Image: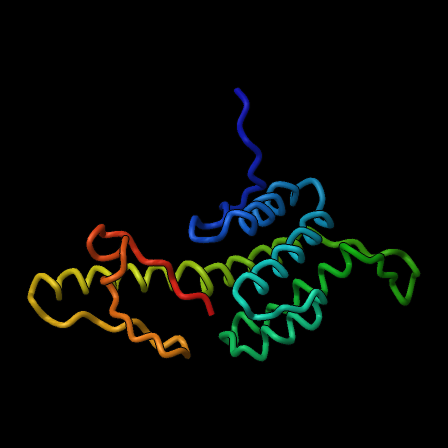
Length: 182
């Protein structure tokens, strides 16, 4: 019997956009064969996440990470975020030891760290907002049944005063609305 390779990591959550999930899942699959390839894919995945979430428009990963750190990420994510850049640099650009001159490889535990940081970002940017939106939609459905005013959508910095559960595909169908992207 043939089983699909997974690399031992869980796949990207369904809330993650497919192009980003594809890079993450591939980084997981190649981890056991090549920590360097996994590290390079993690770096690429990070750039996609930051661009897709509107955190940074820079093509330079160093600048994109600085933009992300300035966006007030939770401290536990911010402390680990720079790991992807540094480990990705070992994967993408040969780095030599200053004492031996040998090229320093990406170690499997470092590539796993990258995947863990990406999982934290997925949870912060995609999973938790989707869960929160689903909870608000469910409450609005109950409020509507009780004849009460619906909750307003969270302020996203604009003049949007729509109420949750009033847009197509939300409270009437029981599906969570698209989450506002910051």
